[in-house]
Image (cartoon, rainbow, N blue to C red; front, side, top):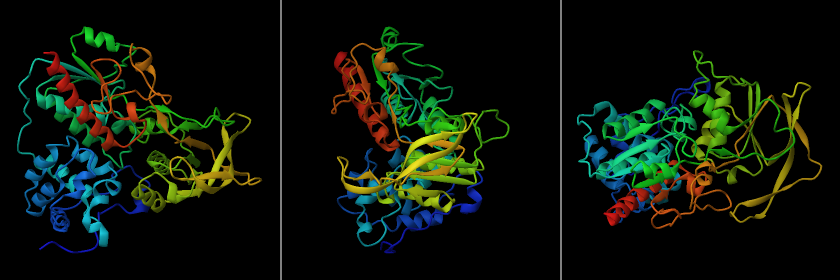
Length: 463
């Protein structure tokens, strides 16, 4: 009989007043006993509605049934038959709006904690691995993957399993893309990302870092080197700003730069010399997961006051509920229905305050969210010494501008055939944020899987 408890088993976490001073992982994970107990809440529905909410179609009831039976190794095999990065997706995937939103248990209570169980299985396997990773028999064909974020890693993994010789080209000095530079250690430990990358290397995937495609090599040159197809998974790393007065002041960061200095360049560690302002009062502009990450990092760097400045209400915030909850627990101050109009500097050109106006919500806009309008005469100043802009990113135009035949939309996102993810240049495929703009890790992984299958069909059709 299933466990009919209406609530999920609690995920153990660090105390908020302890964790907001360190970069260790917030959630410490289920024990074997707790995982089995949570797995027994699953009804093993005949039609598996949860699977329809998963972008990579993990066989969710099957792996959960194995957890319930205590067969964690089999559970891992089931997950990784469709998801090559379960330790990552189990931590950062928005399950509440995807697989768990379809769970029947959520009708009269909380859904099964699918993400927590996926994380448990992946972590258990990393600690108890008994099987060596094997290379598939090489089929004699070469594919280049540009970018080593979730789309690129997934595409590379699936192609390697099919027998392709895959080479990944990463612009930064460390592989992992946004998983390394964008997501903080306390949400996604970098050792876990590195473990997944090491697994791909064991499968025969080659990684070359410091390779800025469009500068060091062009897409045309990759084809000249014998690669039969190219996958572009270069993400969306070009930050957006508001174009308001004062954005050139010292102490204004894009969230991209701020998080890269902390996560990739280890600015939070004393034995690293990475320059970064350690502010006392911080305004983070935006309401998504990146804004939450930046705010929580600033708090951990020692800031006394950290404000989230967002022009809509909490109901409209795109960040995960879990991230908003954790930010509040850690002492982040939410300044909702406020919008910056200027950044004010002192005589030295350093940030001294941010000027905002109050907002009110009107009718829904094209996105379905209520459109914010300015409350006239409501200007006020918020004293800060650092402003972090977390209002979105777009794809870097470098690859597009140096490759003949690649088309993009007005936002700079590459144009692809939605059925195959082939771009307007034959043999070149693309997926993830380079196509959609900034989105979730799991959607990028789904695109990587789709592209790998399409590349396989493309190359076979040519031979």
